[in-house]
Image (cartoon, rainbow, N blue to C red; front, side):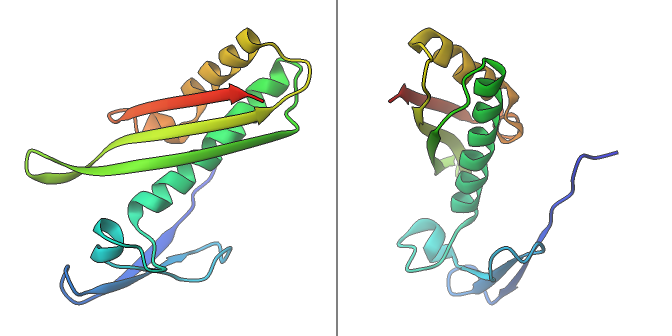
Length: 145
């Protein structure tokens, strides 16, 4: 049995270049999100993209995994700031997600740099979205503030 299932539905109208879509997360946590090919490959202009949503998923998942691992090391974080950039590039003539780069800032009292690095490495191995992206290049630039 799965831990959880989460769903979203995209309704698309028109061809790729001029078409538009609406992504509706089933949770209702956010309103429908507009998406276009241009928002994916040019300027977002207030619209989202699959890569932006993947970056949101990866940054939030990694923050949760790191919070867990830090707590297991007896150092609950005061604050974690996790940014993520997912890169879409052409590989063999096809658009491909090639990397996910995480940048982490952490405020954690009473934790040394070595212990922090250990928790970051453990979080990287634990994060389910990192494992989903296992074929892509994933980097984590983390600093204890």
